[in-house]
Image (cartoon, rainbow, N blue to C red; front, side, top):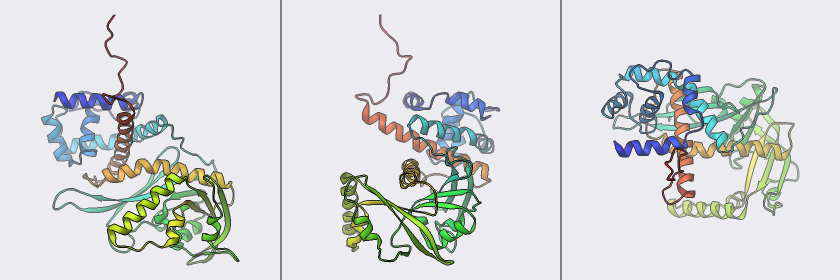
Length: 366
């Protein structure tokens, strides 16, 4: 228990400022029946979210650790009530990490769209695909759905996401397909998506993508082209924006492709190595400079770095499937754990020899 308390003390030092006050403001600790404080409530909820225990297992572990004396049903209610608390903790963590979340304006609402597979532990653990959409800069979850991992309609596609006029959806290359693009446009929305050259057909007289990007020779050099993309509804005018990566990033990506080729016995085409030198983004937006489109996607990628850690953490854990509120709270909690882990790794790497910051309450000898 002493070791656990010491470790918790380190984690508290990494929390965003005013995290306990946020618990009171959001109503997460309005009813602390079974808990001594909001701090004990957070420790208990993180057993469920970060450790992957079921609600019943969490309640038992919390009782053994003398953190709380509650039932799994009561714990579920506390999780639902903590949804807004976890969301605001995530926003605060990103702000303290100096990630400025973009906001397009009143006429354009930015939405980050993604999906991931949840593998619940145990022999009878279920596989789920979690589809979600977060609004920027508030990180409000405006769409959340669980599906199976197989069968028609379970894959990652814009067609699964409800859209409205004025929306602008940001997504990675998995969402780059003609049918999904058509769905967004028919709904009156816009999109910015990482281009997968092998997944869509582009058309422009006297031009091809490989020749176009090959002209970018300097790190950070950008260019854009007005082209047409094939969709089930016909050819659609879009913009393709490109920026050349740094040599370090290019070398890293080439090594990754070579490892993949060696490990799986695949043949990587020469054009794949060439495309790996650039970030390619497709957008339906008519306005906004090349730099602005790439910057919006870059910010999405900064958030994606945290979500990548989330996706590794999300493989372990019992996802509450009772209602949307508990599921959203679980999602925000997972993102918070990912951001906390990101900060812990940075502090452990940058601060030596003990690996954490000295608190302001440290005793001083006169």
